[in-house]
Amino acid sequence: QVQLVESGGGLVQAGGSLRLSCAASVSIFRLNAMGWYRQAPEKQRELVARISRDGSTNYPSAVKDRFTISRDNAQSTVYLQMNSLKPEDTGVYYCHANLYGFDYWGQGTQVTVSS
Image (cartoon, rainbow, N blue to C red; front, side):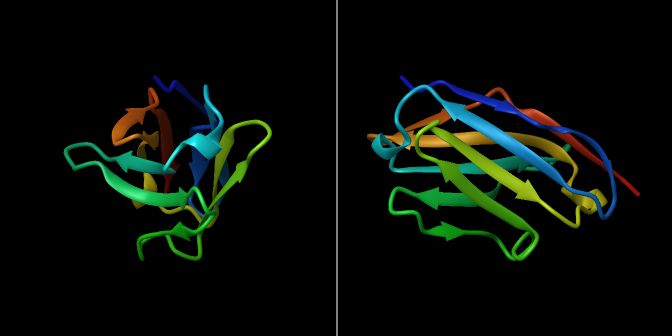
């Protein structure tokens, strides 16, 4: 079992920044990968950032060069730094982890970007 606790969402104006945090209940070195997904109203959940055990990262084109995923190994915490936010970035952001083929999700944190 892996518990993920997110924090850091909120309301921000377009062009602003937010940083999300996700604390894992296990050492992140045990996890195959961690990532952030988001879900806008009436849309499917989509990947926004992923970091593998070896530290490699990947981003979809919609957020590349604006979002940065990083981790603090000692704190078992993953961060998502979001810059130059756009209204289309609005949604519920979920932390995700994979361990031994099982997927775990956080409770989600709302990010709202006003125009």
